[in-house]
Length: 250
Image (cartoon, rainbow, N blue to C red; front, top):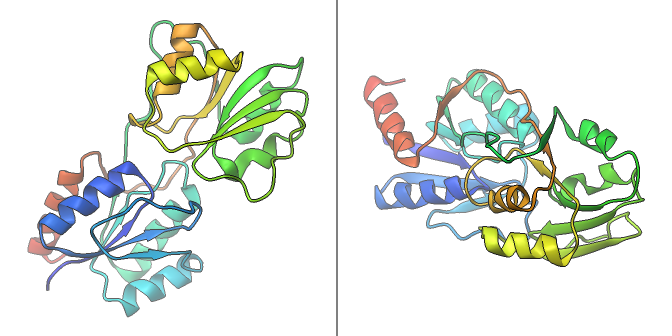
């Protein structure tokens, strides 16, 4: 049986994988959650929108004769990743996650590590500061309990509804970013503090390097816990895994 891949996308790693899959002549479709208005172009067919939970994903996998699922979603897309693990187990379809290593604090970093978004919000209790809030537009409202701060919001798409902050600036831009530009951005806006998810990878790391160079603290939000699964960190290893499972008839 020829492989028929479902790639759960939305990351630069997913884009790289789609290019390799297309070059290898494999059949695949990449799926986006629909949270970004202008998703990156890919050389394989795409679908946009949710599946309807675990049951909906199982139905999709069976109806479309999917043979392999590759979870190349963002490290914080925890619900989709959990659903994928459960759905693949029910449908008896092999799953691999294309992941990126989390960032590690280096000499000169001043990180305040927290376990989740509510914990980051709690750290912001206190005197007004000028905050670069780099958590994506889906989580902005969760920071509304601290309206005393100025918030610099860099987003892939402009929010449909203005953020619930009395003092903020929205910058619509898509990475990857450079350290020099992020350092200048922080200086131009007088940033005192950066809030970031520990996304890993290179595309969003510039703000962490810039904060280090400027001596700014970073509230670093740890990744959510996920079920055990097969993980690789290189798109080529995904192809190796697909070929290996196909040969073994997994």
